[in-house]
Image (cartoon, rainbow, N blue to C red; front, side, top):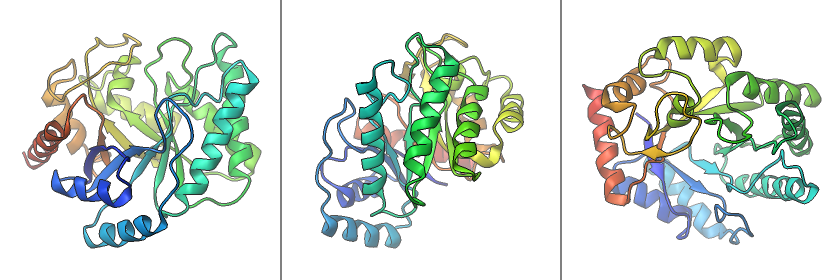
Length: 281
């Protein structure tokens, strides 16, 4: 099973990998830079080389890089969109040092411009960046809860961004999706009582072949609340029975699972052990 959590990148790649192993993880997620934005730390190529060797020896991966929350390709102000584009382009260049990584981002918020305009702005940014060269990193759009003016509140909006981007690039299968269990529930998809139905809907609209990663989170909110408040596994509205069905589902079980629950390192160690037990059970 590929299971891990979000880790601090402050100590570099090797430190993250060693921490992952120490808590029973074999995948991990990290922010490419401060989650509120700003410049990224210089990459130590010796650290990257040591990480790649350690990752191979310990069967770690795929690692999932997460874009900062301030990245909004659908922003109304040009400076906001320009910041998003420069950050993503820089992140993808840096991730070329760790082949096989994935890059996850929140599609953005249209801030009153309308979903159609938001989709056009997001796909425009993606097509400009991805036309530069064939990156080794797979870019993932994250499913969102639908709070405020978020784009990606349903599977149709995710698919619209993918279609517009790949149409502009003239090639398909470039983009993937990260399904967040808290977000899809908060967005109105009943993964507690109708997981099979939700996955069938995802397959019909987006295609299960696009699904590359799972953010495994419980939620504080009721179905279709359109909020975004993660909870520890089994402590929220999803519950452990639903989490067990998710991690054991034949269409999901081989994907990498990344925890984003409100835990410290010991809490993540406990949750990883819990997920493994749910998987074995």
